[in-house]
Image (tube, rainbow, N blue to C red; front, top):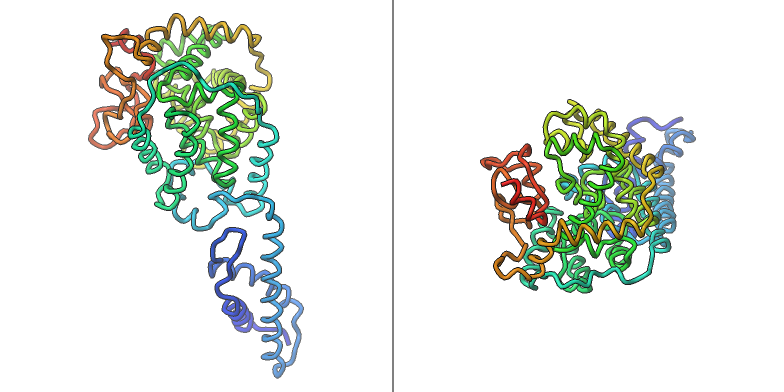
Length: 456
C-alpha cells in the first residue's frame, strides 16, 4: 500500500525534527527549519514514490525512511560543503545576510543574480577569486603629490558614516568598518566614499582577506588609477572626467554639444564609473563582467565603457529635454522612458550588456597621448584646484573636505549651483523630504572649483 498524504507529511516532519538544528559549515550558520524541510522533502519524494507496504508495516517503514533520510540529509550537506571547501565565503552566502540587508541600496540591482541558489553564488565567488591571478601586481600607482589628507579623526568619522549607509545590520557594519580601516592604512589618510561601495560589492561573494588583497593590489598598480580616484581630494576623478569630455568631443561633436547645452557635465556622473566602478548603477548581471574587464584592461576600460555608453544611449540622450533626464539615462535609470518595475530592469540589463559589447570595439588614442592630455588638463583646467587642494593658495583656507549640506552625515561629492552648497550623491539623487534641493538642479564635481565660480 502506498503512503497517504498524511503519512507523507508525518514523514517530512519526522525527518526535520530528527536532525535539529544542523550546523552547516558552508555558511557557518544554523540551517533554518524551512531549509531543512526543503531538503527533507526532496529526499522523501524518492522514498514516497517507491513505497509499497501493508498497513501493519507502515510504522516500521516510516522509521526506516526517517533514519535513512537523516543520513542522506547529512551526506547531502557534506557534499555541498565539500564542493565549496576551497571557496572563501562572502556576505551573500549567508541566509541571515539576506534577511538583514535585502533592502539596502547596494542590493537594489542584484535582481536574483546571487539569490538564485548556492550554485550561482559559488560561480561568482570563484570568478572573483580568479581575479587574484589576473590582476596586475606592478606597483607604483600610489599618488605622490602632497594634497591635503584627512586627519585620523576625520577619516574615522567618514568611514563610520559610510558603513552606516552601506549596511543595516550592526554586525555587518562592524565588519565593513574593520575592512575600510585596514584598506586605508597604506593610503596614509586617503579615502573616497566609493571605496565602501566597491569593498561591499566584492565582499558579497568573498571574505574580507581576499577582498583586501584584490583591491589593495589594484590600488598600488598604476594600471588601475585607483590611487588617483580614491582620494578625499577628487583630482584624479576630475582629471579623467575632463579627459572623457575631450574624447567625446573628438568622437561625437554633436552629442557633446547637446550634453553641454543641457548642462550635463561628465563630472556629474563620472564618479559612478571612475571611482565606484559601476557599483550602484550597473545591474549585477553585468557588473561582474564589468569588473572582469577592469581587472584585465585597467583604467582604460573605464574610458572605453564610458564612451561606449554614449554610443549606445545616443538616441535617447538626443531626445532629452533637461539635465535630469540625461543624468538618469547615464546611470542606466529608465525613468525618463516611462519604464517601471520589470520593464525598467530588463531595459537596464539590456543596455549595460550592449555597452559592454560596444566597449570592446572602442579604440582609444595611444597611451602616451592619453598621458599628455592628462598632463595638459592638470596644468590648465585643474591647476587652481590642485593648488588649493595642496594648500598652496594662502588666500584660500578651504581644505576641500565638505560635509553634505543637506543630511550633514555624508561627505559631499557634488556642488549644487542652484542651492549654493555641497551635497552627497545620495541626497542629490533622492532629496530628503523638506529639502529645497531637487535632482533637476545643476551640479558639478566638487573639485571643479573654477567651474563653480563661472556658473554662479
